[in-house]
Image (cartoon, rainbow, N blue to C red; front, side, top):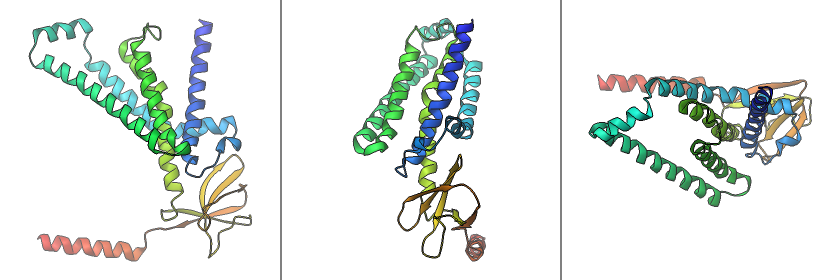
Length: 256
């Protein structure tokens, strides 16, 4: 019993750690920075907490619904043998799942061959997740004592959570590196201080370090996270809102 608890603890901590690393990799690959050189283990785990909550919530709801609607294997085989709509639907779901699997594999291989450098991770992550998922589900060596619904739910989290967080981190990193998007620029008494000619776009604060992104050179600036101010920029101007509202009102009048 003690060994099982220890193994479960190691699995949970290992998954949390790797998920945090995956999110950071996805985010910082946009800046070509090895962020693991600047963060502590606690920072890595914390990085994955908030981004992971929506994914786990959706999986939990799906698992609950699947368990509620599931029927026994014997009953399913009996209904398939009877033929009719249920048999056709069963085969449709089976071949649909195969088609989705092949499409996903093809997409991951395409990304691996077309992307460069660390961007190849966009293909390697889902490829490894898919192969590992099907291997564990098909194998009778792992989690054999669990029900199929519980097993699928748990294995899905273990296999796909790092991939989800890598992609989520990548999306957030793309937004953080876009100087034309809404965001903040950094003002303070540090080396990387925003001015009229150059804006340092706020990226993140990790530990005691402030990361910002130069609008002039597209270089990442790393300073101590103390005594700085974040100023909003690229916000929608009031006159733009008024213009949009005026256009909407004219459109409504024309429709009438």
